[in-house]
Length: 258
Image (cartoon, rainbow, N blue to C red; front, top):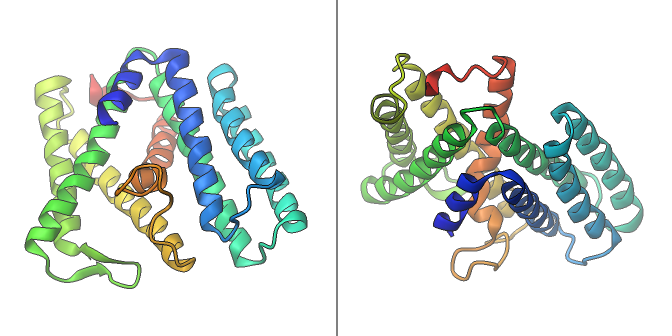
């Protein structure tokens, strides 16, 4: 799946937009099913279609318009959930939080990819940083073990895994600065890498918290033996929205990748 994902990122344009919109729509369905809503009813259809269209619109319209649409459809979803599904109180709050997070991730990825001149490199760096953190946090955490990071949420995660994952993301930032982008700001990417790694792990823990809250082991069974899309993309939910927001606040400053 990884080569296909990277290939679509490389091609970009409408293919990338369609892929990300479909991916986020599927993830929104999985998230909704996690929150004790097993029936694929009218609310579920609204959830999936609205996510797909909102992420798609971010390619054709201003990002701010897409964000406003996302907030509006989340409000509509809250109303439909209250009327048509058994979700109450905290169940509904968890579901709506997930819808906003998934929508923001899709909009953020498309906005980053479409930054003139540097979008491809930025998204490649972001994806590789998240994957590097996830892979090495797992490998070193399983090897070194030690104190648990959040035993009540994800019993297998350790502090050694977290520190190893963040360290490898920092190392990737150094290598990227010197070997690929030839950036003069050689400290910026390692710092961004550390922040992105921490946010990716936070996204992982957040999805684990939801699964534990509702007594679910995997978010789905789309990938046999590996769970659903949320299980594979949880790090993106933590890292992408905040990374895109920070770049937007800096008014699209891409100097660390130059």
